[in-house]
Image (tube, rainbow, N blue to C red; front, side, top):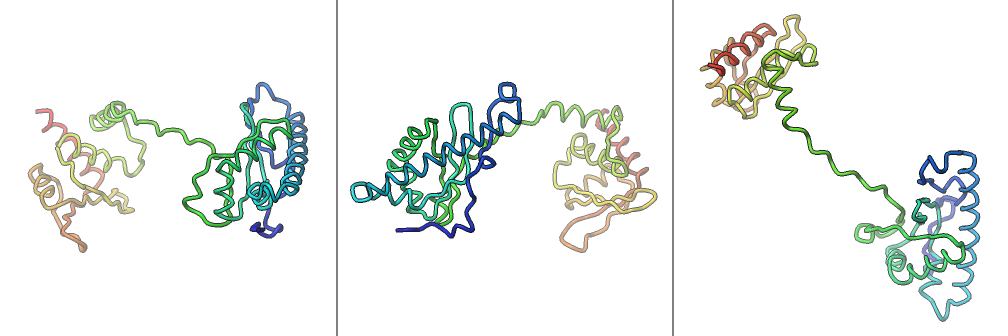
Length: 256
């Protein structure tokens, strides 16, 4: 019946195991918070052992609760304004299933009543992924990704192309400005990439498909094409000045 791992690998539940998530403006005194955490830890620990002893005494009439308490280890607690979430170590998938079923709900209710605190079990879907050694705990919610401001990005790129804004790219500024001009003004939206060489004149090589290479030659790119050693890519090697002059040509052609 005992599935719990060796005690050496389990974390003792102390005041340091209580993680505080209450507003700082209401609980701004660190010393008071530390004392409160210690009190919570002592209260929950005492309630835990009481509920565990009660489950052992009723092991014949309620074997599920006895098995659950025998194989749970409390190693933390997250204190929130709405209540506290238990951080539990669960030895096996079977015990984890009990924890997230009616037996676990009865256990949380009994522990809350004994501790006189609102204690809940964290929502957890690890039953579908793990079989042993499950850490069932509260996970901070992840914020939704912020949608980029595409209009601001486009305006910034147009300002760089027109020379109204200098890109903060250092030695790569001229090449990056040219890449922007090729994409936004010359209509080359394919996979044009660039590699830079550490050279006093800022040598940069544009790599593109044969179709895009023909378009660059139509625009009178100031470099001779050469084939890549890997794959059907065509390269054009330009200096910083070449990049600047070619960008100005693209801007003037697109404005005509």
